[in-house]
Image (cartoon, rainbow, N blue to C red; front, side):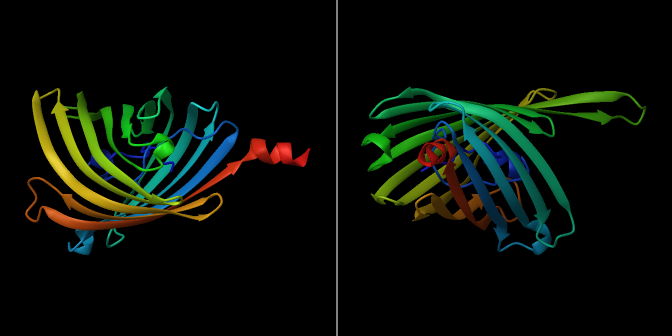
Length: 256
């Protein structure tokens, strides 16, 4: 099942504005195929509506080769009471650098607005080829974000923050077209200006991925998130999404 967490990594959308994401492993899109994805997430169940966050995201990706893909993704967010809103856009490239029966390694580069560049990676240890049984995966993102702030005297200060988000995940393919996943999220943020760092455990999630058609996948997720330092650090989240893959190359061959 295909979902490369390129849209927002958990810390960057809840503090990268909150991660809009789906639980899934990384796989490049087939050459000549395009993928259309749509997700809706709500974080803050159990909190006041003003402290909750809603996210809506879409993704378009296409396979340049069987190992290299590119994507573009907008993300829209709002507070639970719909008072504040924000938007982000990202684009990038990712691909498989090692593909064996039991070990896969994927690398990606993401550029996002506003002001973020990130190196993404995922390492899969699989019990069987093509995710047919079960496995464990480690997903990571090393991100550099910056912003300019104006002091009272009119001078401009450029601030830079480097962060690393990590996901430890497990998957079990119950049968063809049905997969259960569990993920745990950790982060490390380093502020260059103050030379301080902050490590945190950010939460866990369980997801169910179901093929509901030949080219359509439904993804449902439940999150238990942790916000370090908050008066009420624990809160729930839920998300649902769909992935539709259209293999234009195969359709063109079928027409001839």
